Length: 150
Image (tube, rainbow, N blue to C red; front, side, top):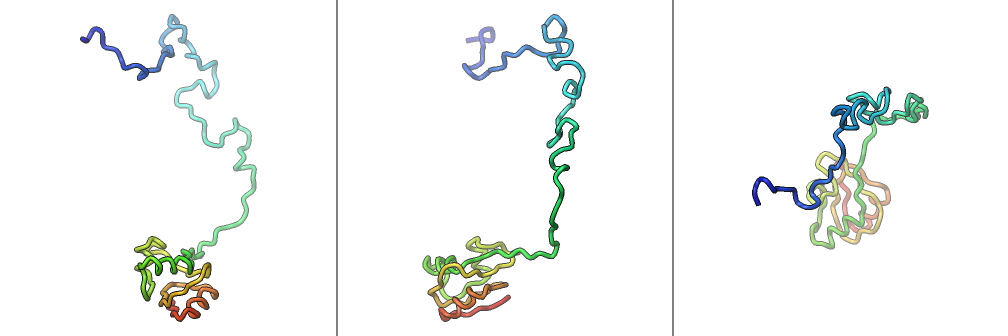
């Protein structure tokens, strides 16, 4: 092998197209296969997302509705069965607080945690959170635990 007989590996190249816009003699000169006039024939053309050829686009035809409450509080829900799972796995023994939620990726340090009532809790726990549902609070206290609101 030397410089005169180098060739690319089998299957590595696949551009067999004629080069466009390189003179009339090439067979692809002139309009360079772009047709005549119109936006698509121009350099730099790119169709905007949602553009429908000048027709009123769908996202502008459909009316807006509703609103977003800027004062809304987003709670990160943690269920009782998740707390019981932590007890079963030996991660928690007697108290659950923000450090436990963050360490087990149930919430981040900046999120507001709400304890929800899905599942059942058998262990006696001191649960610390920002909010509790009525069923969750009742279940924790029924198991002999304590509810602490941050």
